[in-house]
Amino acid sequence: MADKKSNLQLMSEFSVGGQKLKNRVVLAPLTRARCTPTKDPYDKINKIPNDIMGDYYEQRASGGLIITEATAISAAGCGWLNAPWAVTEEQMAGWKKIVDRVHKANGIIYLQLWHMGRQSHSSFHPDTKEILSASAIAVGSGQASTAFGTKADYEKPRAMTLEEIKQTVQDYKACAARAKAVGFDGVEIHSANGYLIDQFMQACSNKRTDKYGGSMENRVRLLVEVIEAIAEVYPANRIGFRLSPNGAYGGMGSEDNAELFPFVAKAVEKYGLAYLHLMDGLGFGFHGKCKVVTAMDMRRHFSGPIIANVGLTKEMAEGMVRSGAVDLAAFGRLYISNPDLPERFENGWPLAESAPYETWWRPTGAKGYTDWPKYKKPAEKTDKEEAKADIQRSVANDERTDDAWNVIAHVSHLRVELFACMTQ
Image (tube, rainbow, N blue to C red; front, side, top):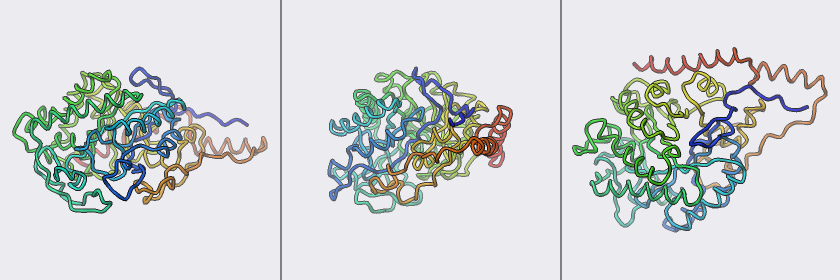
């Protein structure tokens, strides 16, 4: 018998940047470090996207939108061993193969643009032996990854000069131009998780006294300038951006975040961007320095599409979409071990167990990366067995009535409001 189709709004079509997404399930950008490892950390091979990465993205092309792993826009912006770059002709040739495979599988793919700033390590920059940031403030705790695959204490960065900021904006623009040339449907500006643009936006890492520091308007200036520069390459509705107002990763979290991030939403509203990718969940660590910033907080100031992210289940995502808080939902860890995640959601098929931590971003090749199988349906049941299975699926899975899903939507809204109340 044919599989029963769900009434999930997650599985409904949605338009982003004038392109019709086949569903609202998004592959979250995930650093997987699967470029080909080399003995010499400075070998160009370990920065070139390869065929196994093409397998990974093609396997997951049934989602409405694929956002690639964070990708270095320049040598100055790098800082993760075996993570891809998008700088040289060889690197872009590797990306083109991946883009072509995703498009052949009827997928839509955006490149995430990455500058690590103070989270990098000087070993990745042998010529300058320094790292850059908004201000000369090191990440407070934890360790950085080095070019040699080891860990070392975070280093104190050098505050960028005005000329270096100007050059960095041009680096983002040039990288976007290279992305467009090889066929990427759009780009996402990584302005979250304590990387360079986030370092400029947040008060905890930006103590500048020039036009890039002090007021919220000044601290958001770099993001605005990057958006405006890339908009000379891509139409604005093909430019997304990512924010993490609640996250502690990279030593982040500021007392004025509850005011800052809605201000960011208002500051970029006029551009008509592709989407806001909001890490509103707390599963990535909560800084606890102000109340939680929710999707609803951002929705009040940003009328474009919003993607929710961090720790979502199918039920949570469906509820948030139905509540109107968000339009799409990005999944990371669930998508690692379930390459056919949209089909599993739609048909009520069981999910595979989570991928083991050691395979997330270590150079284990196909293991834990492309060796996750798609769901294989069991042998056909008799009509009686199928009828019983239908009942079980209706109770336990996603064939709820719209009224039932609306209750879940209400609960999801209460969830984010509860987080907010708990932190006031």
